[in-house]
Image 1: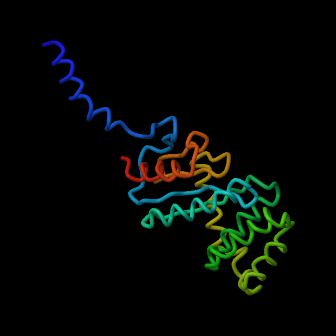
Image 2 (image 1 turned 180 degrees about the horizontal axis):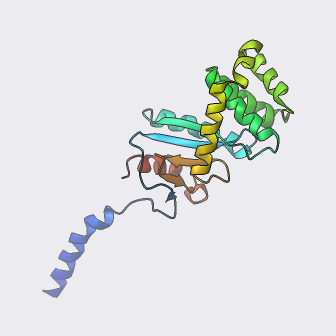
Length: 200
C-alpha cells in the first residue's frame, strides 16, 4: 500500500516539476526595477566603439524577425571611447532624428570595426552622414539642436537609472536585465527574452 502512495504522490508532483521556470532570476537575468512596462520592449544599451555591440547587431535583427511585435530600443552610452564617446552618442541621436539610423548605424560600425578607421571628431562623423546621402545642412541643423539635446539627456537618464556600466546591456520591459555570460548561446538568448516578455 505504501508503494502505491509513493507512486501516486510522485505522479501528483510531476506537473509541478514540469511547470518550473526554464530560466531563473540571479542566473540568466536579474530584476532591476519593481514594475515591468506594459509594452513588449527590449532596450539595448550600446556604443559604436564596442566590438561586442557590433557582433550583437545580427542577433537583435533576428530577434525582431522572431518576435515582430516587440519594440527594440537602442540607448547609446557616453562612457566608452573617451572624448569620442559623447560625440558618437550624439551621432546616434542625430541619425534617429534624421530617420537614417538604419543606414548610419551599420555604416559607423563598419568604419570602426571592419575598416579600423576610428572617427576623430564631429567633422569625421559628419562626413559619414554625408557619404550616406544626408545633406550637410540637414546634419548641421540637428547635431546641436534642442531636440537632440533633449534626447541626449534621456539617454543619460536611462543609463544612470539602470546603472549601466558595460555594453551591450539588454533590459527587457524595463524590469529584467540579461546576464549574457550565463545565457551561453544565440538560441538561449532568444528564449530568455521571449520568457521575460511574458513574465509578470
